[in-house]
Structures are given as C-alpha cells and as structure tokens.
Length: 579
Image (cartoon, rainbow, N blue to C red; front, side):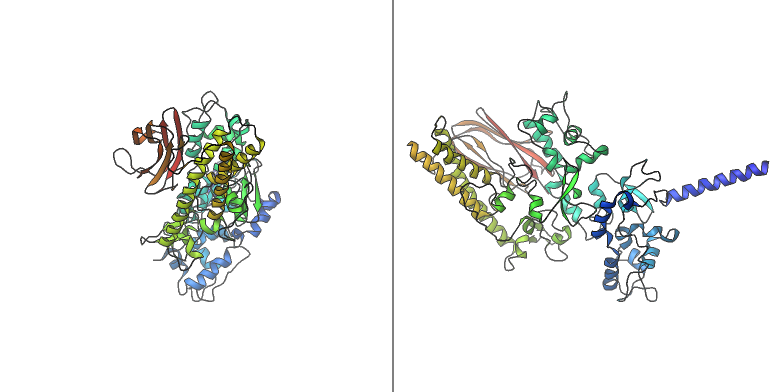
C-alpha cells in the first residue's frame, strides 16, 4: 500500500512538472482550429501578408546572408532574428526548438550556411504570423477569452503588452529590436495620431462643461470624439458603446464633464493606433474601424479612408475638411480646380523616400512632408515627384503658397465679417443667399488643415468668391468696402501655424478696438508663459512662440493651449509641440 501511495505521489509530481514545463513553453494554449469559429477573419488573414512570410525570409537569406550560418544570422555581429517576427510560433515545431534551430529547419543551407540557392523548407509546418502569434488563447477557450499578447520566440512565452499599438510595434518598430530598420511604430509615435487623448480632454473641458457624455455624442449639436480620436477605444473592457467609452476615458463630476475634465485610464486609450486604419487580419486593405458598428469598412483608396475624419465623409457637419478641399466637396458656385492632378493625401503625407532614409524606415507614418535625417539633412515628400527639387526649395514653395492663401483669407474674413454685420435684420433673400454661399466657401477654407497648401488654386478660387459676394452685398446695401488698412471688424484668434510645430509657431489675432490684451500659453496643468499683457490698438497682430516656458526652458512634446483675453472677448485654441 505504501509503495502504491509513493508511486501515486511520484506520478502526481511528474504531472505537475510536466504541466509547469508545458506552461513555460506556451503549450497550455488552446488547440482549437481558429478558422472553425472565426472563418471571416481567417479568410482575411489568408489573403494578407501575415500569412505569406516564409518566402519573404527565404529571399532575404538568399540575397543578404550568403555564407552565414543560422547562428550567425540570429546572434552574429549583424544579427537579425527572422523567426521572431516572421514566424515566432516556428519554435514550437517538432516538440520545441530555439530561434537558431528553427531558422536552420525551415530554410535550406549548403554545408551549414545559407547560399544563393536557399529556399523555404518544411512549408507545411511553417506557421507564418498566425492567430496565436498575437492572441494568447487560453486552454479553456471559449470559456475564457483570448488577450492580445506577443509570442516571444526566444522565451517561448507570451509577453504582455500595454496598448495594442505596442503589439504591432514589436515587429513594425523598435520595441523589441532597437536596431531594426522597420520603424513604422516609431514614426507613428512622432505624429498627432499618437497624441489624441489630451486633445479630446481639453476640448471636453473647454466646450462641453456641464454636459454628460450622452449629450456630447447624441445631443442637439453632437460631436463624436471617439470615432476619430480613438475609434478602437470601444474594444476596451470587453467592448462598450461610444458613449460608454467617452465616459470611461475622460473624467466627469456627477456624470457631467467640467472645466476640470482630464484624461482617464490612459494605459488603455488606443489613440489613432495601427488597427484604427489597418484591419490586422488584412492589414494592406484601406480599412476604417467604425466605432459605432465595431466593424471595418474597406475603401478603394486612401483618400476615402483619410476623409472619414479629415473630411466630411462620415460626419457631414465636421470642421475638418482637408479631404473636401482636395476633392472639391462642399463648394458652392465655384468650379473645382485641382492644383496637383492625381495627387492624394498619402502621396504627400506618407511618402517613404529613398531606401535607407529615415523617411523610408518610418514608412510614411509620421505623416510629415519633411523628415529630419540622421546626418542633419531633410527628406521632402515633394522630391518623389519633382526630381529636380530639394527639401529647401520644396519648403519655400509650400510657404509661398501658404502666405499667398493666408493673405487672401485675411481679406476674405475681413470683408465677410462686414457683410455679415450689415445683413443683420436684412430680409433680402437674394443677398441672404449670397451671404450663405460666401459663408460656406469661407468655412471650407477655414476648415482646411494645411495653412493654405492643400489644393491652393482651389482655395484661392473659393476666397475670391467670398470676397466678390461680400463686396456685392456691401455695394447693394451702400456700405463702403473696407480698405486693406482698415481695422478688423471683430475680435478673432486664428489657428497657429505651423501646427504641429518645432521649434516655433506663429499665433495671429485681431482687435476691432483698443483693448487690454493678454495672450497666454497653457497646458492642462496650468500656465506656461504669457506672450502679451498690455493695451493694444485696433489692428491685426502676429506673435511668435519659441516653445519655451516663462523660465526660458524648452517645453516637452505634447498638447498646449493658447488663450486670448481682450476686453470681454475670450478664445482658446489648441496646438501641438513635437520634438
């Protein structure tokens, strides 16, 4: 009896050790066939690049690693762990192996080294970037749900992640391999797309104080902050509605937003992350994650994808209309003019540049027209089409376009404001129609986000129409047209330019009367610097902020506000300082 008990104890110990070992190497995961329940996503995966990685690796080994052994490729002076990103689950083949053994197993060698004849081997067992490369699926699934995690081929265990973007950044960025030349995630981190939560918090505190999340999303003047600033936020906590997401990610007082509203649950907020525009199961399709439906919508081109948030394609009353300017959508009585025929959003904002440049490594995901290279030079998207143009010349042309457009916009805003004031109480339907048309075209230009560069010829045509119609109203009503030197007709605080900026930006404002003026730079913590504090005459003004605080220290990257107080007029706008 005692021997039997000891035998049973030994068996139990052996079983425990076996379980501990299998957990360590990740074998405690579900063995269910994902395609049985997730057939749609599986089919998408089958047609995407994640399911076609072995030939890519084989080609690179045969081209760049001739004469090197698997160990030299993985651990040598110019190490590159092909397994870790192109097929991390390969190490689970044949009962388990190392990254080096997997590389030697799945790709042919000659005399133990790769050659120009290297091809894929054992293709039937190569896993590609399979479902469980990014999903930690527990053994009792579907009773327990999978979580996003990165399967680390070196440890054969799952690494937990923070935000979903950091999962993509393991292979499409430098989060795991610092010396990688795949820097898409790094480029994204430099963009406004990765800095959206505090932007929303500031707007909620400034414009929606006293209202609950449901009123913001569904009230008389709804504004769906989630849909564009963090659409995949609805996936948090197992899924929620857009209204619930707004309440979860931003603080309220007694259920309402307030002047004290700030960001909440920042570790879960996704920003406009990779999976907002890429369906991870078919990442090359132009896909928009619709937070209202929880599904991806696929578009024929990138412009339609960008236009969901940077245009009126999803929200007709938005004041973000860069797409509209590019495509001529929303103009009244003005013939569409295309400044650069056939050029769309991503041609300028996602240009990859020449091979081995930072622009190429970022894969266009800074969305910046200009990218600073390590040698101090700049890569300009313009040169991809204009071969005889360098970055400096490109910048000069852009600034010239912007300056010309801004001068015309200043004139249009001045004369329209006067026309609008004289039409107060005027019932003339013809004149009211002219004013409405002028307002629509002026709004279209004001809602562009390029400072006047996007489709500049069309913007100039729109502003000429605004000036013409406004002058016609003034002439009909017997009001003298304003001269260029005439003081502004109303207070105004305009959007800074450039934005985002580094190292400096220009803030413009207008005073119709002599006023006590205060212009402050602030962030969500409080005052940073006062730029103007004193009496000023009626006129238009420009003030440059050099990105420093009141002590002369350069501020950190992030969201800032500039606040103008002039008499009874107060206005706050947002800007982003980006190093």
